[in-house]
Image 1 (spheres, rainbow, N blue to C red):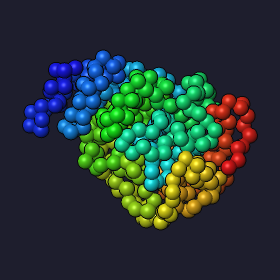
Image 2 (tube, helix red, strand yellow; image 1 turned 90 degrees about the horizontal axis):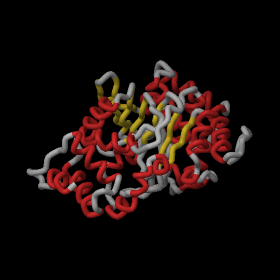
Image 3 (cartoon, rainbow, N blue to C red; image 1 turned 120 degrees about the horizontal axis):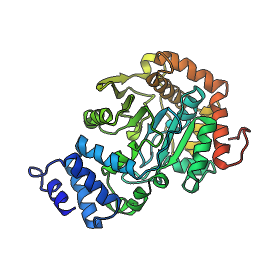
Length: 348
């Protein structure tokens, strides 16, 4: 590990990118705690300063996948959002998952307890507010819920234990590291489609090339709300569409399709996130969040080929929300995750 650390920490002019094999070895040392805490911290900080190469990212993803429980549960779309959570925006991807499942497109969600640098509200916090302690769920319970509803939720650190072992180090470092990207790309259910959130547009090119290397059939890289995969509803969103080893920049403008809506100032916590999501899933709630779920659902259905256009996706999604189909999927999923064995609808 010392030799690998020397290569990435020689300073601005002396540092070099590791080869794939070198980065793979570094990831092995870190995830198996064969390196000391000081070495791990120094390596992750040096990589953050140098900026990770495509080969380094690919290697770290490969090692995370090596130690993860991965199952071909369904052929669908992976929603890869930030594990450090949200502080100022609605987690639209959560209700969007049940909307897509109602449209016949299976979804995989995943996450962990909050991490630096943001320390925001995460999917696990939202689930706990719904009475589901995902951190104690068996993988069989999660898979069974997916079989019944088309929505798989994976508590990442339970399905990839080495990430749980290095959590204390990541918390002490307190900044973004290469794992903030790698953990989102474990692809627990071998999904052919991916929607992936980023914060800075400077990483579009690198991550597009990474998606090509990882072999996704189609991927959408979104510079969304708080670095998430959620398209904005009050302004245009920059996205990169990746397909057939090619990628291009597009702009998704909600105003162009009549959906642009001013977003109300909201004090977000897990309770507010859940109640807002449930209201939308029942065809109601504030129009900004309803429209945001419509837009994200339509774009993701278009990405997967379930609809021929975003406009067709909007009509499809609106009908599924207003007729209660998305709420029915959510209700059945929640009951399955709670282990109640019933298909009765839950209440807000």
